[in-house]
Image (cartoon, rainbow, N blue to C red; front, side):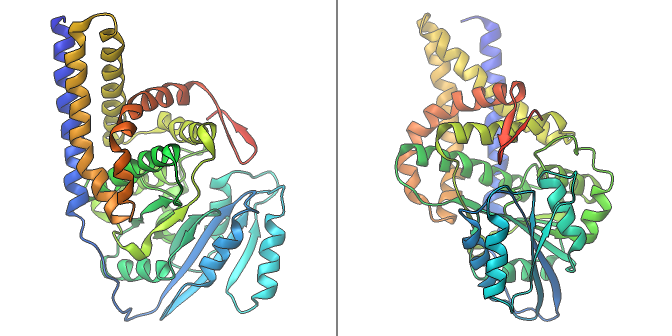
Length: 379
């Protein structure tokens, strides 16, 4: 093995271990939160941008209507992004049979489309000072709203990120997609805990309406169809610092969502997420993306070369062992917190496939387009 390969192996191995180590320490640093009694009223609006969610939206509406709220001025806004199925009729029927709910159905303006436009429409119409967002295929605990409001009242952060998990399902593919997703949730939480926020998930987050109006007025990310959550987090971090971004480690705040359907669905989702990386301006996020991708790329390259030159197998094995070793604590932690500890039975085979998955989606996501809710996008 040449000296340059050895140097790269050390650089990427140490860099990856340090990065994941920081996220791991940050994750375990976050204490679990127990909501307390709210002493003063807070107005909150749940805003959900939906498109073609006829198969799932009834569960969402039932989750929202089942929230246990006390001393909270609460409303929910469902904003339809030009659905071409019967999503809106399901919402209207639900409103007719539940007339006492403070729930409104809005639609995006003609000529406007996409999740960002739908969210902006809902947030602008919201009466609450605190905004909670989720997706049309999600379900949540009855204490979801109360937990967020209690946490905000105590700490007053500008943005709160929350835990998201896929619905339970059997089989190896489900285990792979769930564990890969939880590695992102855990890393995002750990980065926030370490004071270096890099990402969050719009399926479960809260923020001040005033902060959104202030920062998104000059949003440079509008040309990207994806990234309504991450770009906003970066804007908050740039303006107010990571100390004003918190992760709500509360089991009552867990949001459950539907996993992508099959391999093509998973790849399309990851292409959509990767496509926004071209718009990143946050240094820590760029560094994390660079380290994770090139560590995976170099490890995979060593494996391919080792098929022809035996001397490259040992450095490949060392890097792969580093990944297995440093990834486990944070993945075990997030799986335990979210009640998915059984996924760890699949840990080793998932790790084997995770490296080529990162490399492939990292490259293809920047070269190809993606589809979302029946729309084709290139960015």
